Image (cartoon, rainbow, N blue to C red):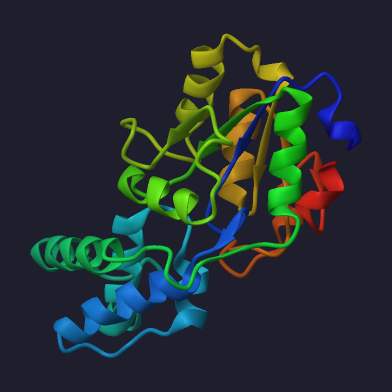
Amino acid sequence: MHPLLDDIELVAFDLDGTLVDSVPDLARAVDAVLADLALPAAGTAKVRDWVGNGSLKLMERALRFATHADAASPGAGSEVDEALLERAHRGFLEHYGRDPGAHTRLYPGVRECLDALRERGLRLALVTNKPVAFIAPILEGFGLERHFDLCLGGDSLPEKKPDPAPLLHVAAHFGVAAEACLMVGDSRHDIAAGRSAGFRTLAVPYGYNHGEPVRDSGPDGVVESLAELV
């Protein structure tokens, strides 16, 4: 086992960009909404840089791009019309919800890692900013629904990552001290949440981190594949 697992009783995993590459399905839904609004498509490369803060923020970023809001006000960018954003977000949930796992794939080493951790008797949790309604269909598509003792989505609690609240909730739910918990993710939001919660943190470099190296976020460790954990 990886040294970061020493004395660890609970491992919390991010989903998108950590366990699965979901950008093809997310981009499909984003571009379908933009087409419905007669706006230009964003494409997978841009969506890959926008993932990580939940579906509402994803659509806000897409609308900023498609309506040139950022170009109109360099730096912070001008405000996206609230009614337009609400309509776009509803459309995204509809399009994405039709088949959220159609083109989503597990990263190499994920299944082996989860199987081994379960066999070792560790508690496993999923903590993602993706709406909770989409978690089960994706996990079921890969036969991983029984691997996790608790799953939290971005709308499960009032706060989402990088706020530590979801991780603190997981630790409290199982009665495990924070120092006996590990957060595994691909982005600065995962590392910030883990650090603030008092968890150890482990990063994978292959996911979505807004175009920045996740090592710059200062995780306790980095692995090229989750298979390295076991």
